[in-house]
Image (cartoon, rainbow, N blue to C red; front, side, top):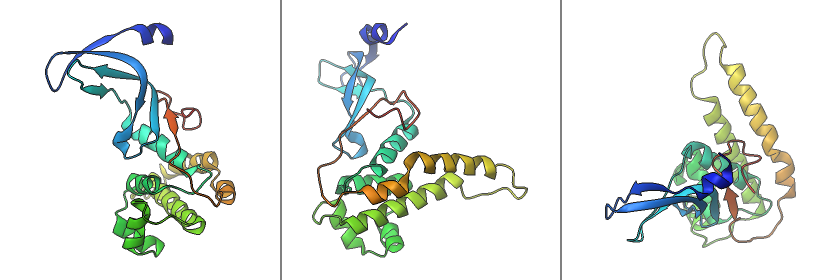
Length: 198
């Protein structure tokens, strides 16, 4: 079955609110659940009910959130507050931990994330480096086997990730200007971060 045929198929599901039948079809879905107003998922199964309920089928949530984060790290302008908050939460930092790590106060972090104070170019660079470092730490894991097995494979994955982001070049290219959150259109069925974003 090709994508066009699959798109035309309708799938039924029971509504979580009114318990009537919902009809699902493949379409674009504004994914605001991640805390970003600018992310649109393409070609996802979305169920609609006559009561107004809408439910999207979102497979591989971990990969989806990683795709969003990788694309935010590649953004060529200064991060918006909501993008900075998303990245902080994605790597597992509390606002206090991020403040301690960067040397900024928790109130500065809060003002950035709530968009009461713009992030400067230098602060943006530091935030990306800290987030990237935490991402590498998370990818490497907390436990390393004593005999050394497993670590080379993990480091190879991390090395490929570093190469795909081309972070040093991106940090040089970030423009000293602000703009709204980057519109992202992501097909979550594609697992390669380099091709899933249009």
